[in-house]
Image 1 (cartoon, rainbow, N blue to C red):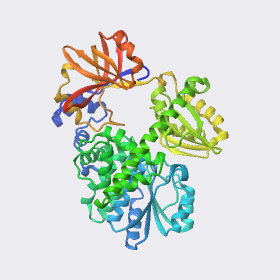
Image 2: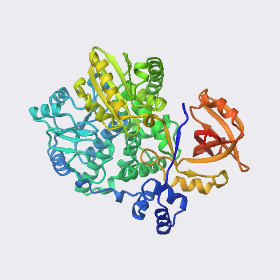
Image 3: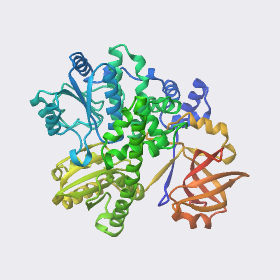
Image 4: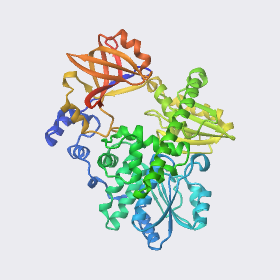
Length: 574
């Protein structure tokens, strides 16, 4: 909460709200929130509130699925060695885990390869196929990568290694030559859900194999690991992603779990807890990601693949390794973020542009993506963070709403060796000598597209509410909409004329804790990363307008509702 936000009040059609209330017998509050999110038809709203595996689409509607299944089944029948080629983030690791486990259950002889970020680089590389071919692999299935791996696909063909690509990143003009390319974003694919994570596409392949082999009852076992990858990849939590995330979280909460997943939950302090999206985003995903960022992603893959109880001691050691790597990641990230912020704040040629491009010699490539995200949060501008070493600059890009960073990279392609990703997040490699020209080119592009209003941070409010209306029943209605994330944000409300009766007090020198009162009702509240607004709150404590969401909290065995403050305004500002 570094600067005050523009408050945008969201609206919807009242007739849609009335129609949902009458058709589904739900509360007007839930109906309004659904309608605001564009879920205003009764059938779609029912499926949203009551997701089921039956709501998953026919996997064979995905272009390329039929030949992929036929080739995999032939490989299993002929006892060929199949390699799963993953990616080093949570999405890629969980994709690797569920597909390898599924193929082994179907009787396949399966190995996996996950590139190490600093040694192997991103995605499919020609030399990887040389290695796999030498190991006797005859079929490679990529997960969460490969859609732009044309050179690597050609090398596979030259070696006589068959390739199946499953991915969810944006394709280029030409698809790689392969037995099958499964990606809902293919321009010639009419699959109804285009927003699957990489692990969602891998799950569709598992679903297709289960259907072909009459093993549909096996599918639920793969959903909870798929939920971790889906939530970590910040894809819109609607459609099939919501089915995966909601049902997967329920299964993560209920158990039982294989020994590897059990060890991960234990080291994250989540044993026996009801797991929600926040637990995945802030406790599970960072530990799994830390393997690929700081060491080898295979640590996390081996942990999640551990199924035999005789592996309990090994699983606990792997989980402890992930915990240690996550601590090291946090320390590395903090140092680079401080350096990056200093550049933005002190160098006008960087900080005055509509996109931030910062870099440093030897910055750890495993954390620059996180640093880019935090720069976006702090300055509300797209950000590119570069690690420069041995004559190359490797970069991670993160964007704001309304700015397609992948299109920006395409505009600057002449300066780049390679790039790829999504509209909101992408990666790149270029010669270190090209950094200055690239910075100028992409900054000019962004300056032409983004105006002052685009660079003002906004919060979108679902409605105004009084403290007396915030009851346990009201909170329970909000829970029907969980899990929250991209495409389904946590409901955000505003309350006017609120008095601060206790605090604000600093929490960990970054956050502010306080007690708020309105019309005789009192709530505890925390304003995250808002320490710089402490004096403002103190000066206006008798009457403030707050924007907030509701959180369940527990302290010394007591459960209570707490307000998570997104912003506040003095009455004169409202």
